[in-house]
Length: 237
Length: 133
Image 1: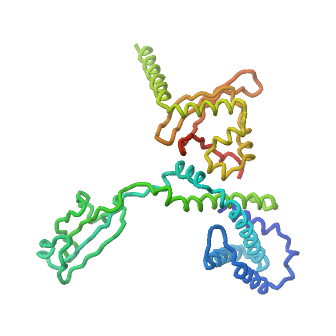
Image 2 (image 1 turned 120 degrees about the vertical axis):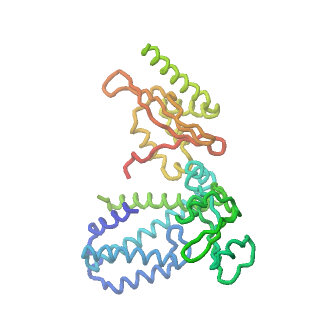
Image 3 (image 1 turned 90 degrees about the vertical axis):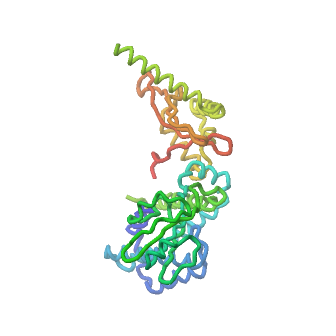
C-alpha cells in the first residue's frame, strides 16, 4: 500500500500541468464526485454504494491532507485525485476479471499454507456478580435470582488466556461453572465464574473461503496496479 | 578418546538425519523426484505446475521463469535434512549441486524448501520476494 502511495505521489510530479491547468477546479471536483456516484463504481471488493463513496472520500481526504502538508496547489491536489480515480477504475477491471480465477482449489492452497491466519484462541464467557452485602455474596449460587443492590456483568468471547483482570489473576484455577470464593473489591463483594465457550481451533475452510478470496484479490489487484502504473511511467523511488 | 567421541556424534547425527528422510511420505518422495528431474532439465513449465495454486494465481508464468532463471541450473539435488514434518507441511533443506562460476568445479548450495499437501498432492512454496517489486 505504501508503495502504491509512493507511486501516486511521485506520479504527481510527472503529470503535465498543461492538461488541466486552465480548468475550473471546483467544477472538476464536482464532476469527479458526480461521476463516482453516477457510475456507481464498485471498488475492489467493496460492494455497496456507500462503501464506494466512503473509500473515494477517504482517498481524497488523505491526498488533500498530504498535499496540504506539502503545500501543493489545488491543481496538484486535483491531479492526484484524478489519478486515484482512474487507478481505482483500472483496479476494479482487474479484480473483476480475476475474480473467477479464485476457485476453491486456489483458496484451499492458501488456507493450507497459511493456516495460522485462521486460528482462533479458546474463548469463554466470564460473569462477575457483585454484592453490597458480604453474607449475600457468600449465599449466592449460579442461577440464583439476584438480590437487590447486586450487579451482574457478563463479558462474552473473552480470550481464555487474558480473561482475568490483574486483581482476579489468582482465580485462574477455576473450572467452568465453578463459583469463586468471595472477593472483596473496593467497598463491594464479588463472585466470579466462567462458562465453557468456544475451544481453540481453526476457522473451517468453508467459512474462510470468502475471506481468502478477498485476500487474494486484494494482493492481485495491488500487484497488477503497481505493474500498470510502472508501465505508465509512474515509477516509485 | 575425544576423536572417537566426535566420530560417534557425527555418525549419530548422520543416522538421525537419514532416519528423518526415511520418515518422509512415499508420495512426497515421488513428487520430490519429479521436482529434481524437472529442475535439472530446467523444465520450467512443469516446475511452475508444482507451485501452490494460489502462488500461480498471484504470480504469472513469466515471473516464475524470471525467478527460476536467476538461479544457476542445478546438476544434482538431494535432501540434506528434514527440518520439520507435519501432516500437510514439510520443511526440508536441500543440497543443490551447481557449477562454480568460471570454473569446471562444482559446489553445494544449501537451501530451505517448504512443501504443502493440498488435496492429496504436494506443492512447493517458492520465495518470490527476491524478484523486484
